[in-house]
Amino acid sequence: MNALATLLTAVPPVLGWAVHARWLHGRLTRSRRDPLTGLWTRDAFTRRTRRLLRDPRAVVVLADVDHFKQVNDVHGHAAGDALLAAIAARLAHGTAPGGVAGRLGGDEFAAVIVDRDNTAADRLHTLTRVLARPVDTAPDVHTTVSLGWVRAADHPGDDLSALMRRADEAMYAAKRSGRSGPRRAARLGRLLGSVAGRRPGRRGAA
Image 1 (cartoon, rainbow, N blue to C red):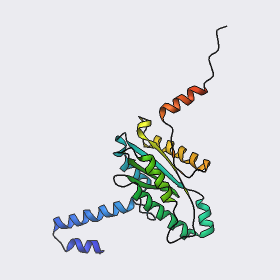
Image 2 (image 1 turned 90 degrees about the horizontal axis):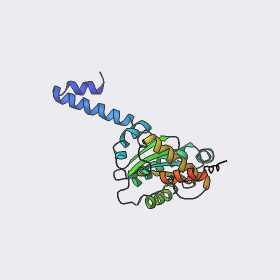
Image 3 (image 1 turned 60 degrees about the vertical axis):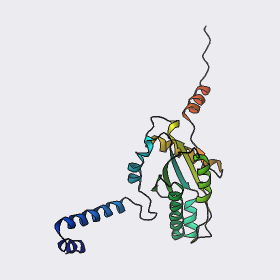
Image 4 (image 1 turned 120 degrees about the horizontal axis):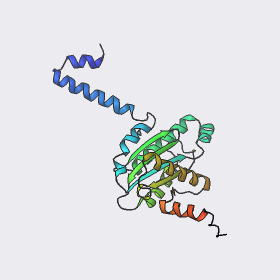
């Protein structure tokens, strides 16, 4: 008989079920957390962002560690794990209060925040610098973090998947440019204007 069963037999039935429900809830919550970083897993992150995305001020953020494979190759996987854990903690702190942060896998992270005071651009510039700071337990590891973001109001009707694709494109644009700052996905109006500008002119009547 395991410890939980022993505990349940030692308490009144109603209290026993309460203990059991709390235990199950704890196990379920832990299964939705990434074991290395403590952030929400991809599925749990997706579920928790639906409410936030109802607000047009919502901002979707994607972050990716630059040259992470090189960190593992040069400094070892323990240093790489320490770096990921530190970045996760900084991301969670930088998107609080009210935001949701998750680890999508590997060295890629995501977050959704609600930009109530219209300071997302400045806030994310600061966050980019914070994410790139050396880790106390691995001070020799130096890297940067590419960050892309998109405001939900710029693309009305887009769901989380579509917004994440836009943020992902912006993130890789930031990575390719080598700039030490986040890249914002283009607004819908600018995208339409850009497409219209590339259309060939109409031919004149014969």
